[in-house]
Image (tube, rainbow, N blue to C red; front, top):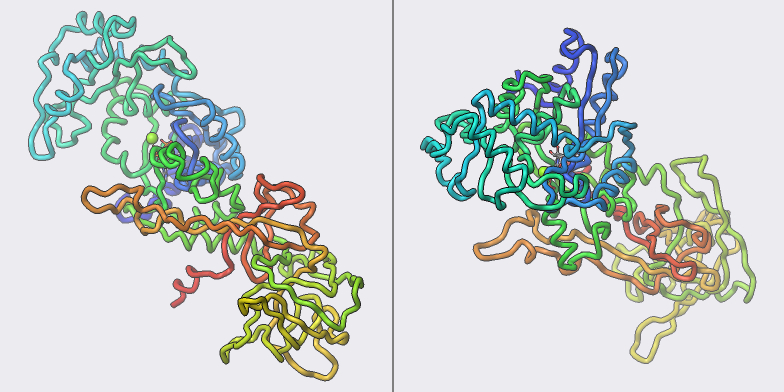
Amino acid sequence: MESTTKPLDFIRAMVADDLRTGRHGGRVITRFPPEPNGYLHIGHAKSICLNFGIPQEFKDQAAAGARCNLRFDDTNPTTEEQEYIDAIKRDIRWLGFDWGEHEYYASDYFEQLYEWAIQLIKAGKAYVCDLSAEEISRTRGTLTQPGMPSPHRDRSVEENLDLFARMRKGEFPDGSRVLRAKIDMNSPNLNLRDPVMYRILHEEHPRTGTAWCIYPMYDYAHGQSDSIEKITHSLCTLEFEDHRPLYDWFIEQLGIFPSRQTEFNRLNLTHTIVTKRKLRTLVEKGHVRGWDDPRMPTLSALRRRGYPPAAIRAFCEGVGLSKREQTIEIARLEFHVREELNRTADRVMAVLDPLRLVVTNFSEGQVEQMEAVNNPEDAAAGKRTVPFSKDLYIERDDFMENPPAKFFRLAPGREVRLRYGYWVTCTDVVKDAAGNVVEVRCTYDPLTRGGDNPPDGRKVKGTIHWVSAEHALDAEVRLYDTLFSKEDPNDVPEGGDWLDNLNPDSLRIVKGAKVEPSLATARAGATFQFERLGYFCVDPDSESRRLVFNRTVTLKDSWAKGQKG
Ligand code: ATP
Ligand code: MG
C-alpha cells in the first residue's frame, strides 16, 4: 500500500483506519519536533502544516481528542539556545497554528530515558563500549560488508551497569565511552549495527544545566519521546526511513506505547538553502543582516518581507507529499504570495525612479483630492483620496523621448491616462546640460477627471501611476532577488564553496522613491500593491520621515503560465 499510494493519502487512510479500529482509543496525536538550534525555515512550514493539519482534519472523528504537540528536541546541548526556542514559538503561531498547553521538551525525559537504558542493559540489550567514535564507525562495516563486533560487546550486565552509572556521574572524559544497543552487527540495515544510544559530553544544557554529562542520541531519544507523549502518528522526513526499524526496536524492547513513524519528502526550493546549519553560517559570516533578513528562507524573514502566512499554508498544501525527494520552483511559492496579496493588499501609488511632470495648464497651488479604489478585488476595502497638483512625479521609464512602435506610455505629443487623475498630453521636455530629460511638461484635459474617458470618445492606450510632488513621502525601497544565483546552491565544482553561489545582486536599495501621502500611517508589516510595480511591505526600519519598504514579490507570474502551457 505504502509504495503505490501518495503519502498524504496513505497517512489519511492510516489515521482513518486507526480511528475506525480504535487502535489508539480514538486519539490522533502528532508532534512537531524542532531542534532549537536555529530559526524555522520554509521547509519546516511544510512539516508544521502537515503535523498540525492532520489532527485538525480528523478532530470530529477523534472521540478522545486530536492535537499536535510542540516538542523541542533539545538533546544536543552544544548548539541549542533560548533565543531559538522563542523564535520557533513565535513563528509557528504566526503561521497560524497553536499547540495549546502541549509544549514539551525532550530534555524533560532524560531521567526516564536513563531508566529505560538501564532496563535494556539488564535485559542484555545494551552495553558500554570503549571504542572511539572513529573506531566505531570504522568497524560498522558497509552496505556490502558486515560490521565487526566490539571487543566490549559481551561485558557482563553488572559491569555495564557499573560503567554506565559512572558515565553519568562524570567519571570519564568526553568521547571515552558510549552506551550502545546490542542488536545485530550483520544486519543489512547499518542503523541496527549496535547503534550508539548515549555519549559523554561535559557540556551545560540550556534547560538541565549541569545535571547531565551524558546525552541520548537522536535515535534513542526520539521514538521514546513520541511514546511518552503517546504520539499516535509520528510524521517525519524521508532520511529517517532507514531508522524506522530502530525506532520500532526500542519501543518493542521496552514494551511501551507503540507510536508509529511515517516518512514524507523534505521540501527543497530552487535558489534556496533549507538547512539551519548553513543558514546560521550566512548569519554569522555577515552575508545577510540576520535570521530575518528578507532574503532568507526563514519564516521570520518571509514575515518581514511581507509573505502572508495563508500563502505559505496554501503553498505547502499545493506541493503535497511524496516518497521521492524533489525540488520545487521558488516561482511556485511566489505564485501563492501574489494570489493572496491580490485578494488582501490595498493598492497605492509609488514612484521608484521619479521624473518630474509639470501640468502647465493646472493652477499653481491648487490641489484636487482624487478618489481612488483601495482594492478592486475587495469592495469592503473602500476608497481613499490622493492629492493631484501641478507638480507630479511619474516613473522615469514611463516616458521615452523617442519611443519604439509598441510603447504606449508617455512621449512627446502623446496622451496617457494618469490613474485616478486626468489625461495628460506631453508638450515639451526640459533637459540638463548632459542632455538627460529632467522634466516633462504636459497639459491636462479637465473633462477626464478621475482618469475617465472624455465625452468626445477619444482613446488612450496607456495608464501610468504618479504622485503629487509636494505631498509625496520619501521612501527607501529594498528590491530583492534570490539569495543564490544557482538553482541548486549546493552545486559546487570540485574545491569550490557553496558560498561562491551567493548572488551578488540579491539586494538593490532604491533611496529616492516617492510614495503617496496615505502611507504616512502605514505600520511595519503592512503590505501594499504599488500599482503596476509589485507588492511591498513596510519594514520595521521605517521612520516617520523615511519609510522603508521591502519588495515582497513582483507582479509578473512565471509559474502559473508554465503550468498551463
Ligand atoms: P535542518 O537541517 O534545517 O536543521 P532538521 O530536520 O534538522 O533541519 P529539525 O529542527 O530537526 O530540523 O526539524 C523539525 C522537523 O521539521 C522535523 O520533523 C523535520 O523532519 C522537519 N523538517 C525539517 N526540514 C524540512 C524540510 N526541508 N521539509 C520538510 N520537513 C522538514
Ligand atoms: Mg534535526
